Image 1 (cartoon, one colour):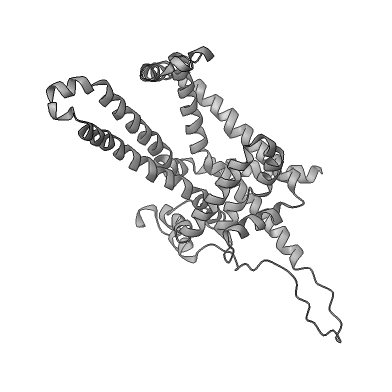
Image 2 (tube, rainbow, N blue to C red):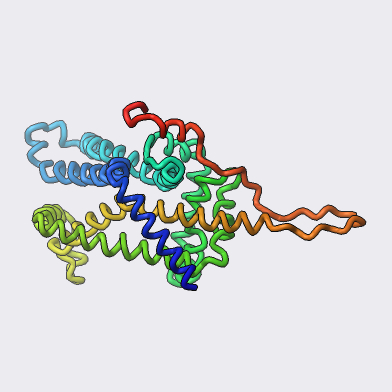
Length: 333
Protein backbone atom coordinates (compact mmCIF):
# COMPACT_ATOMS: atom_id res chain seq x y z
CA UNK A 1 0.00 0.00 0.00
CA UNK A 2 2.84 2.40 0.84
CA UNK A 3 4.38 1.79 -2.53
CA UNK A 4 1.12 2.58 -4.33
CA UNK A 5 0.60 5.82 -2.36
CA UNK A 6 4.20 6.84 -3.06
CA UNK A 7 3.77 6.37 -6.81
CA UNK A 8 0.76 8.70 -6.76
CA UNK A 9 2.70 11.32 -4.82
CA UNK A 10 5.64 11.02 -7.20
CA UNK A 11 3.34 11.59 -10.17
CA UNK A 12 1.80 14.60 -8.42
CA UNK A 13 5.16 16.22 -7.73
CA UNK A 14 6.53 15.32 -11.16
CA UNK A 15 3.54 17.05 -12.73
CA UNK A 16 4.17 20.19 -10.68
CA UNK A 17 7.86 20.06 -11.62
CA UNK A 18 7.12 19.84 -15.36
CA UNK A 19 4.67 22.73 -15.05
CA UNK A 20 7.11 24.87 -13.04
CA UNK A 21 9.97 24.31 -15.48
CA UNK A 22 7.80 25.38 -18.42
CA UNK A 23 5.43 27.79 -16.68
CA UNK A 24 6.09 30.60 -19.16
CA UNK A 25 5.13 28.35 -22.08
CA UNK A 26 1.98 27.10 -20.40
CA UNK A 27 0.96 30.63 -19.35
CA UNK A 28 1.42 31.79 -22.94
CA UNK A 29 -0.63 28.88 -24.27
CA UNK A 30 -3.49 29.39 -21.78
CA UNK A 31 -3.52 33.21 -21.99
CA UNK A 32 -6.16 33.60 -24.70
CA UNK A 33 -8.39 30.65 -23.69
CA UNK A 34 -8.61 32.05 -20.14
CA UNK A 35 -8.34 35.82 -20.54
CA UNK A 36 -10.28 35.76 -23.81
CA UNK A 37 -13.33 34.36 -22.04
CA UNK A 38 -13.13 37.07 -19.39
CA UNK A 39 -12.62 39.76 -22.03
CA UNK A 40 -15.61 38.49 -24.02
CA UNK A 41 -17.87 38.52 -20.96
CA UNK A 42 -16.70 41.98 -19.94
CA UNK A 43 -17.46 43.26 -23.43
CA UNK A 44 -20.91 41.64 -23.53
CA UNK A 45 -22.08 42.97 -20.16
CA UNK A 46 -20.02 46.16 -20.22
CA UNK A 47 -21.26 47.42 -23.59
CA UNK A 48 -24.84 46.39 -22.82
CA UNK A 49 -24.66 48.21 -19.49
CA UNK A 50 -23.20 51.33 -21.13
CA UNK A 51 -25.92 51.32 -23.80
CA UNK A 52 -28.80 50.94 -21.34
CA UNK A 53 -27.37 53.59 -18.99
CA UNK A 54 -26.94 56.12 -21.81
CA UNK A 55 -30.02 55.18 -23.81
CA UNK A 56 -31.98 58.32 -22.90
CA UNK A 57 -29.12 60.66 -23.81
CA UNK A 58 -28.47 58.80 -27.05
CA UNK A 59 -32.11 59.01 -28.17
CA UNK A 60 -32.13 62.75 -27.50
CA UNK A 61 -28.98 63.24 -29.52
CA UNK A 62 -29.93 60.68 -32.20
CA UNK A 63 -33.75 60.44 -32.51
CA UNK A 64 -33.44 57.56 -34.97
CA UNK A 65 -32.34 55.34 -32.07
CA UNK A 66 -35.73 55.78 -30.41
CA UNK A 67 -37.15 52.88 -32.39
CA UNK A 68 -37.59 49.28 -31.28
CA UNK A 69 -35.91 47.75 -34.36
CA UNK A 70 -32.99 50.14 -34.14
CA UNK A 71 -32.67 49.59 -30.40
CA UNK A 72 -32.66 45.80 -30.88
CA UNK A 73 -30.04 46.11 -33.61
CA UNK A 74 -27.82 48.22 -31.34
CA UNK A 75 -28.08 45.67 -28.55
CA UNK A 76 -27.15 42.85 -30.94
CA UNK A 77 -24.19 44.83 -32.29
CA UNK A 78 -22.98 45.51 -28.76
CA UNK A 79 -23.19 41.83 -27.83
CA UNK A 80 -21.81 40.12 -30.95
CA UNK A 81 -18.11 41.20 -30.71
CA UNK A 82 -17.78 40.02 -27.12
CA UNK A 83 -19.72 36.85 -27.88
CA UNK A 84 -17.40 35.97 -30.78
CA UNK A 85 -14.30 36.52 -28.63
CA UNK A 86 -15.78 34.46 -25.80
CA UNK A 87 -16.84 31.61 -28.12
CA UNK A 88 -13.39 31.37 -29.74
CA UNK A 89 -11.63 31.46 -26.35
CA UNK A 90 -14.03 28.87 -24.95
CA UNK A 91 -13.37 26.53 -27.90
CA UNK A 92 -9.61 26.95 -27.48
CA UNK A 93 -10.03 26.13 -23.79
CA UNK A 94 -11.85 22.90 -24.67
CA UNK A 95 -9.17 22.00 -27.22
CA UNK A 96 -6.50 22.48 -24.56
CA UNK A 97 -7.93 19.45 -22.70
CA UNK A 98 -6.46 17.29 -25.44
CA UNK A 99 -3.54 19.43 -26.63
CA UNK A 100 -1.98 19.67 -23.16
CA UNK A 101 -1.86 15.87 -23.00
CA UNK A 102 0.04 15.85 -26.29
CA UNK A 103 2.39 18.56 -24.99
CA UNK A 104 3.13 16.45 -21.94
CA UNK A 105 3.90 13.42 -24.08
CA UNK A 106 6.08 15.62 -26.27
CA UNK A 107 7.97 16.87 -23.22
CA UNK A 108 8.51 13.34 -21.94
CA UNK A 109 9.94 12.35 -25.34
CA UNK A 110 11.94 15.47 -26.20
CA UNK A 111 12.33 17.49 -22.99
CA UNK A 112 10.64 20.54 -24.52
CA UNK A 113 7.24 22.22 -24.66
CA UNK A 114 6.85 23.61 -28.16
CA UNK A 115 4.73 24.08 -31.28
CA UNK A 116 1.26 24.75 -29.89
CA UNK A 117 -0.37 24.49 -33.32
CA UNK A 118 0.93 20.96 -33.86
CA UNK A 119 -0.46 19.83 -30.51
CA UNK A 120 -3.79 21.55 -31.18
CA UNK A 121 -4.02 19.63 -34.45
CA UNK A 122 -3.95 16.37 -32.49
CA UNK A 123 -7.42 17.40 -31.31
CA UNK A 124 -8.76 19.33 -34.30
CA UNK A 125 -8.10 16.50 -36.74
CA UNK A 126 -10.69 14.53 -34.73
CA UNK A 127 -13.06 17.45 -34.19
CA UNK A 128 -16.28 15.50 -34.65
CA UNK A 129 -15.32 12.82 -32.12
CA UNK A 130 -14.09 15.55 -29.75
CA UNK A 131 -17.40 17.41 -29.88
CA UNK A 132 -19.35 14.20 -29.31
CA UNK A 133 -17.05 13.36 -26.40
CA UNK A 134 -17.75 16.73 -24.76
CA UNK A 135 -21.47 16.34 -25.49
CA UNK A 136 -21.59 12.96 -23.75
CA UNK A 137 -19.50 14.25 -20.86
CA UNK A 138 -21.84 17.25 -20.49
CA UNK A 139 -24.89 14.97 -20.34
CA UNK A 140 -23.14 12.84 -17.73
CA UNK A 141 -22.30 15.97 -15.71
CA UNK A 142 -25.88 17.29 -15.86
CA UNK A 143 -27.24 13.95 -14.66
CA UNK A 144 -24.61 13.76 -11.91
CA UNK A 145 -25.63 17.09 -10.35
CA UNK A 146 -29.11 15.71 -9.64
CA UNK A 147 -29.00 14.92 -5.87
CA UNK A 148 -30.23 11.33 -6.23
CA UNK A 149 -27.31 10.57 -8.58
CA UNK A 150 -24.55 12.30 -6.59
CA UNK A 151 -22.86 9.18 -5.25
CA UNK A 152 -23.03 7.06 -8.40
CA UNK A 153 -22.11 10.11 -10.50
CA UNK A 154 -19.03 10.75 -8.36
CA UNK A 155 -17.94 7.11 -8.63
CA UNK A 156 -18.24 7.10 -12.41
CA UNK A 157 -16.53 10.49 -12.60
CA UNK A 158 -13.41 8.81 -11.17
CA UNK A 159 -13.70 5.97 -13.67
CA UNK A 160 -14.14 8.41 -16.58
CA UNK A 161 -11.43 10.85 -15.51
CA UNK A 162 -8.97 9.69 -18.23
CA UNK A 163 -11.32 10.09 -21.22
CA UNK A 164 -9.36 13.03 -22.65
CA UNK A 165 -6.05 11.17 -22.34
CA UNK A 166 -7.61 8.18 -24.10
CA UNK A 167 -8.95 10.49 -26.81
CA UNK A 168 -5.52 12.06 -27.33
CA UNK A 169 -3.40 8.93 -27.42
CA UNK A 170 -5.57 6.07 -28.66
CA UNK A 171 -7.12 5.82 -32.10
CA UNK A 172 -9.74 3.45 -33.41
CA UNK A 173 -12.23 4.10 -30.61
CA UNK A 174 -15.69 5.64 -30.72
CA UNK A 175 -16.65 8.47 -28.31
CA UNK A 176 -18.35 5.89 -26.08
CA UNK A 177 -15.20 3.77 -26.42
CA UNK A 178 -13.20 6.54 -24.74
CA UNK A 179 -15.37 6.16 -21.64
CA UNK A 180 -15.07 2.36 -21.73
CA UNK A 181 -11.32 2.50 -22.10
CA UNK A 182 -10.96 4.96 -19.22
CA UNK A 183 -13.10 2.70 -17.04
CA UNK A 184 -10.94 -0.27 -18.01
CA UNK A 185 -7.75 1.60 -17.07
CA UNK A 186 -9.01 2.88 -13.71
CA UNK A 187 -10.64 -0.43 -12.76
CA UNK A 188 -8.68 -1.85 -9.84
CA UNK A 189 -6.91 1.51 -9.33
CA UNK A 190 -9.91 3.49 -8.07
CA UNK A 191 -8.49 4.46 -4.66
CA UNK A 192 -5.17 5.62 -6.13
CA UNK A 193 -6.95 7.59 -8.86
CA UNK A 194 -9.16 9.18 -6.22
CA UNK A 195 -6.07 10.10 -4.19
CA UNK A 196 -4.46 11.84 -7.16
CA UNK A 197 -7.69 13.72 -7.89
CA UNK A 198 -7.88 14.81 -4.25
CA UNK A 199 -4.30 16.11 -4.29
CA UNK A 200 -4.90 18.07 -7.49
CA UNK A 201 -8.20 19.47 -6.22
CA UNK A 202 -6.76 20.67 -2.91
CA UNK A 203 -3.66 22.14 -4.54
CA UNK A 204 -5.25 23.96 -7.50
CA UNK A 205 -8.86 24.59 -6.44
CA UNK A 206 -8.16 25.66 -2.85
CA UNK A 207 -4.50 26.31 -2.05
CA UNK A 208 -3.59 28.30 -5.18
CA UNK A 209 -6.96 30.05 -5.28
CA UNK A 210 -6.50 31.26 -1.71
CA UNK A 211 -2.96 32.33 -2.58
CA UNK A 212 -4.06 34.45 -5.55
CA UNK A 213 -6.79 35.98 -3.37
CA UNK A 214 -4.10 37.13 -0.93
CA UNK A 215 -2.11 38.60 -3.84
CA UNK A 216 -5.19 40.51 -5.08
CA UNK A 217 -5.73 41.93 -1.58
CA UNK A 218 -2.07 42.86 -1.19
CA UNK A 219 -2.04 44.68 -4.55
CA UNK A 220 -5.32 46.41 -3.67
CA UNK A 221 -7.11 44.89 -6.68
CA UNK A 222 -10.04 43.36 -4.82
CA UNK A 223 -11.88 46.47 -3.59
CA UNK A 224 -11.79 48.52 -6.83
CA UNK A 225 -12.96 45.56 -8.92
CA UNK A 226 -15.65 44.67 -6.39
CA UNK A 227 -16.83 48.31 -6.41
CA UNK A 228 -17.08 48.22 -10.21
CA UNK A 229 -19.26 45.10 -10.07
CA UNK A 230 -21.32 46.62 -7.25
CA UNK A 231 -22.11 49.64 -9.42
CA UNK A 232 -23.08 47.37 -12.30
CA UNK A 233 -25.32 45.21 -10.10
CA UNK A 234 -27.50 48.23 -9.22
CA UNK A 235 -28.93 47.91 -12.72
CA UNK A 236 -30.22 44.42 -11.89
CA UNK A 237 -33.74 43.74 -10.54
CA UNK A 238 -32.57 42.87 -7.03
CA UNK A 239 -35.80 43.69 -5.25
CA UNK A 240 -36.94 40.08 -5.65
CA UNK A 241 -33.88 38.60 -3.92
CA UNK A 242 -33.04 41.27 -1.34
CA UNK A 243 -35.04 39.26 1.20
CA UNK A 244 -32.23 36.68 1.02
CA UNK A 245 -29.67 39.37 1.97
CA UNK A 246 -28.28 39.47 -1.55
CA UNK A 247 -27.00 43.02 -1.97
CA UNK A 248 -24.96 44.79 -4.67
CA UNK A 249 -21.95 44.77 -2.34
CA UNK A 250 -22.27 41.01 -1.86
CA UNK A 251 -22.57 40.46 -5.61
CA UNK A 252 -19.47 42.56 -6.24
CA UNK A 253 -17.35 40.63 -3.73
CA UNK A 254 -18.57 37.25 -4.97
CA UNK A 255 -17.84 38.12 -8.60
CA UNK A 256 -14.26 39.03 -7.67
CA UNK A 257 -13.90 35.66 -5.94
CA UNK A 258 -15.23 33.92 -9.03
CA UNK A 259 -12.76 35.76 -11.27
CA UNK A 260 -9.87 34.72 -9.02
CA UNK A 261 -11.16 31.15 -9.02
CA UNK A 262 -11.52 31.13 -12.82
CA UNK A 263 -8.01 32.52 -13.36
CA UNK A 264 -6.43 29.91 -11.10
CA UNK A 265 -8.40 26.98 -12.54
CA UNK A 266 -7.72 28.11 -16.10
CA UNK A 267 -4.00 28.72 -15.79
CA UNK A 268 -3.44 25.55 -13.74
CA UNK A 269 -5.25 23.30 -16.19
CA UNK A 270 -1.79 22.23 -17.50
CA UNK A 271 -0.90 20.87 -14.03
CA UNK A 272 -3.95 18.63 -13.99
CA UNK A 273 -3.48 17.54 -17.61
CA UNK A 274 0.19 16.72 -16.99
CA UNK A 275 -0.57 14.64 -13.91
CA UNK A 276 -3.42 12.76 -15.58
CA UNK A 277 -1.23 12.08 -18.62
CA UNK A 278 1.49 10.66 -16.35
CA UNK A 279 -1.15 8.60 -14.55
CA UNK A 280 -2.57 7.42 -17.87
CA UNK A 281 0.89 6.31 -19.00
CA UNK A 282 1.31 4.42 -15.76
CA UNK A 283 -2.03 2.63 -16.02
CA UNK A 284 -1.80 2.01 -19.76
CA UNK A 285 1.62 0.39 -19.35
CA UNK A 286 0.31 -1.89 -16.61
CA UNK A 287 -2.79 -2.70 -18.65
CA UNK A 288 -0.83 -3.47 -21.80
CA UNK A 289 1.49 -5.73 -19.83
CA UNK A 290 -1.41 -7.69 -18.38
CA UNK A 291 -2.99 -8.06 -21.82
CA UNK A 292 0.25 -9.56 -23.15
CA UNK A 293 0.33 -12.36 -20.60
CA UNK A 294 0.46 -15.73 -22.36
CA UNK A 295 -2.95 -17.30 -22.80
CA UNK A 296 -3.61 -21.00 -22.39
CA UNK A 297 -3.50 -22.60 -25.81
CA UNK A 298 -6.76 -24.14 -27.02
CA UNK A 299 -6.95 -27.84 -27.70
CA UNK A 300 -6.03 -28.87 -31.21
CA UNK A 301 -9.30 -30.70 -31.74
CA UNK A 302 -11.33 -27.62 -30.88
CA UNK A 303 -13.65 -26.68 -33.72
CA UNK A 304 -13.82 -23.00 -32.71
CA UNK A 305 -10.95 -20.56 -32.66
CA UNK A 306 -10.56 -18.80 -29.31
CA UNK A 307 -10.03 -15.06 -29.67
CA UNK A 308 -9.14 -12.84 -26.73
CA UNK A 309 -11.61 -10.01 -26.25
CA UNK A 310 -9.60 -6.79 -26.28
CA UNK A 311 -9.99 -3.21 -27.43
CA UNK A 312 -8.96 -2.57 -31.00
CA UNK A 313 -6.49 0.25 -30.54
CA UNK A 314 -3.86 1.50 -32.94
CA UNK A 315 -0.33 1.72 -31.60
CA UNK A 316 0.00 4.96 -29.67
CA UNK A 317 2.97 7.24 -30.04
CA UNK A 318 3.87 10.87 -30.52
CA UNK A 319 3.65 12.25 -34.05
CA UNK A 320 7.13 12.11 -35.69
CA UNK A 321 6.50 15.59 -37.11
CA UNK A 322 6.17 16.97 -33.58
CA UNK A 323 9.48 15.36 -32.60
CA UNK A 324 11.14 16.83 -35.70
CA UNK A 325 9.95 20.31 -34.79
CA UNK A 326 11.28 19.86 -31.25
CA UNK A 327 14.80 19.83 -32.67
CA UNK A 328 14.27 23.26 -34.22
CA UNK A 329 14.84 26.52 -32.40
CA UNK A 330 11.76 28.32 -31.08
CA UNK A 331 11.81 30.90 -33.87
CA UNK A 332 11.96 28.27 -36.64
CA UNK A 333 8.27 27.29 -36.48
